[in-house]
Amino acid sequence: MAMTFHDRIFEISPDIRYVATYRGDRLDRAEREGIADASSSESDRYEELLVNPALLTLVKQRGDIDCGGAEFIIVGYGKFLQLVIALPDGHVSIAFEKTANPLAFVGAIQAVFDRT
Image (cartoon, rainbow, N blue to C red; front, side, top):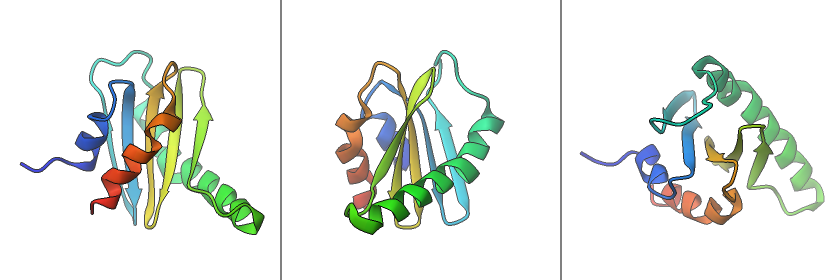
């Protein structure tokens, strides 16, 4: 059986708690088993459908003015760090343990999607 995007991203680091892809009109989510202090599934759903696309739109529009664009954002929540990377047809959202450095994994995560 072929590995999914989520499987490949979870392999990048044990500090990855959650992965979601929102591409076109399709939302797919996966959570690492056994994580502490997980947010609610319904809350995560609305974050992917509403909040992350809105944040990316705002940051990309600002970045396009005179910053050379924008590729990703990192949100520091109280219990985890959320990395949201723009894709041509949507975004990928990855929650990391608070002790991780999401910047260290941006290239590896982007490479997962560059292979398609």
